[in-house]
Image (cartoon, rainbow, N blue to C red; front, top):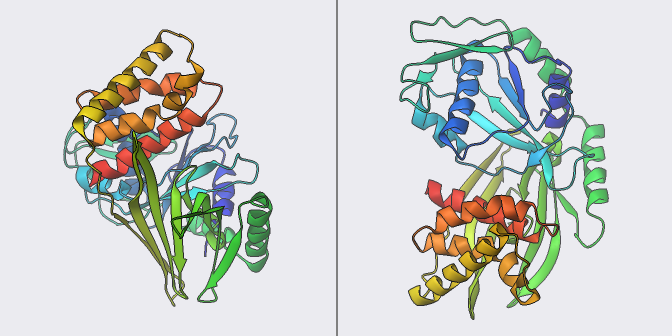
Length: 379
């Protein structure tokens, strides 16, 4: 098994980007431009590495090589983006890799692009890139052509050496377990389980009971062997179940309009550990949006607009309005899911104002709302 933290360190030891790896401070998939640039990098690396993996490391400063980290990214449908835009799409994998010196909610993103030995090209245009465009790497530069392109393998031996040097061992595994328990000492109930005598999975969260059901909040789940964070949630309630081969995570969201509230199941993730030293992760969206009274929703929407207007005009928020401010993004999200006109536009407008607040509660809830909407949108 490859220790992904060690792999990132080994890749960063090649300080300059090259034809088998790239590094980014962050990626943005919320706009056509952001998607297009990400597709370009994946396409270029795939075409330049037909016989070996290639990588993109996300959360690293380009010049200084300093690890800054990014937010946990749990978009299990990222392969859909490849399949939608590419002819001969490579299989890619996005993993969240924790580093000890980063804040608890930050990770380094690692994109692995698996070789397919076929030329990848755009099968439809996006942003300024036209259909049929083929991207490839020459050193650290991404180049393109609309003509024929011949695959050439030049990095197989060096990438195999880097991956071999990142192999896991007992010392790394034990250190990973001790580090996980140390980070989650106070109130997070850290636990571990060994699956098939090969995989060590750690999880932690704040335990709570609701109607005789046991939930965890602020959940952190890590596959220690590979040094990969499998799940992270700052707010939602999570139900955890497991047997000798399977670990099941069911994520719930708390939604409330006036006096109507409940915990609604959002997504179920099943991690299945196989006897051959491999594991599968399958996620299923199980969310069904409750349909609230339209009159109540328009009242909530107008109240949200009033709070947003105060933020835009830099007017003070009254103490009686603080709860409405904290729930601003969540309430806008409920309006979006119930198809209230302009609610999505208004939600996006809140981002900069909530991010600049001293109390980060409302901004954390904004990021959670966007994450939920992204999941629902894919379905």
